[in-house]
Length: 169
Figure 1 (cartoon, rainbow, N blue to C red):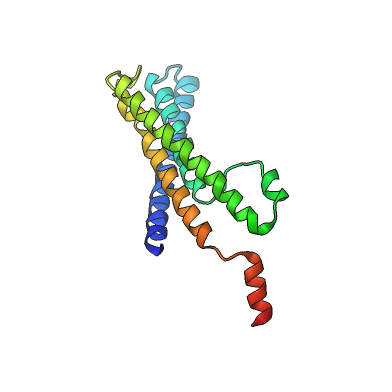
Figure 2: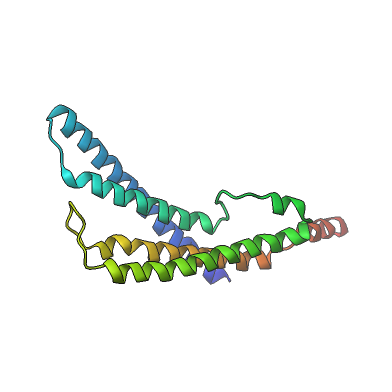
């Protein structure tokens, strides 16, 4: 389990650096486009497209990192209604549904790549398989992080057991 946690931490750290790079590219391209349009009355056609692709990648990879920490926005009414011993299994069930959904989404993303992979982007003229390729990569990282989270959650000692050990010790 420690190996999986180390791999997950390494992957999330690498993705974190990717997120910083993507946000930096977005900032530079937005700023340059503003300067070119308002100062020089011209612009670069490809900056809007690059910024859009970076933004989508930022969202997808950011979601993948958040999945491993169970940090997504959720409605926790069901978790609040059940007892603490059952809550752990409710969370695990929710995470299993998340993993199943994104495994299906990964398959669909590969199908989209096969279908549209030969097309070129409008302004940058790059193959769309590179653009659409970010989805299965992000989904795979997301599923991996969810699986590691579930395994850690299963091994987690319930709060009541910790209290009993503390009182007994």
